[in-house]
Figure 1 (cartoon, rainbow, N blue to C red):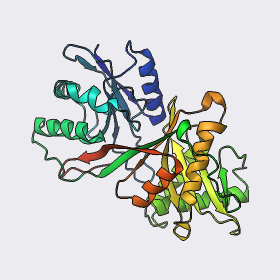
Figure 2 (cartoon, helix red, strand yellow):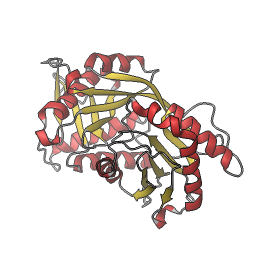
Figure 3 (cartoon, one colour):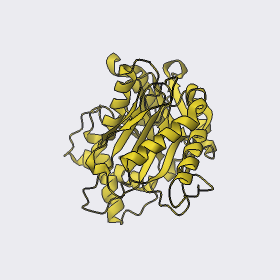
Figure 4 (tube, rainbow, N blue to C red):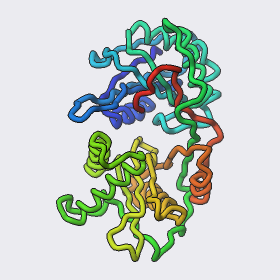
Length: 349
């Protein structure tokens, strides 16, 4: 079966398409998913949008025939960042035990076929890739040697991480520290967006995001990006949700927040969890994680419940790793990385 490239300008549509692809191919497993986005760094007032794409198909015995069609807006000089997964994946943030067995056995032929197809489609240059480390290293080495002039692989990845996941069977009930923190889901709780209380929460969330990015609130470009992110999440119906943590006895103060998104039929990802400096080491992150996992695995309407909550954690973040393990997460040993080439801007991912 040929592999076909589809292009989306909305990441949620991209994730839904992966769901649909897994349900429509003759085999229940897909052998390759590649998603990519243009460099989405923006200047104030810019209308530039990220573009996501997916290559999908089913495993065959013969040589892969890859057909690529793409939207005209993709033929711009901006570089592409690609995300790679394999076998029974519902989204690029979810890995399975089949990753190595299912993809690496066919890596040389499959990746060479992908490179030829990308050449024929005259797509912008690939500048980085995210996925399981063996697959990323193999593909980028082949791509770097293929292009003219050749590209040298970076010595170190931009991001080195591991996938953590929690299913209902792994969820630990009774972990909340009653009387210490109040956890609010800003989508479930019917706040009036124009109320003074919600305006104050909105301001605190933007400040938290800027802290998370280690950005200065006086930087207009970063402040505007944080404002857009919070607005987008609060406007979302299901996929994007924000939980906030308020310590009892600290009137109106926010100790931290958690944001979930990247929704598929069976999974939801914790995209970031942040604790303000004054409250670090006091169980805030764990409270937020437990509350959000309980919602998606137990409390939400049956038709919307997820089979797993996922997140990425850096191996170097020992404190977070211990906290997630105590909360019931399992952490995969398989390394994932975001890697690129020397002297090539990594853009945005």
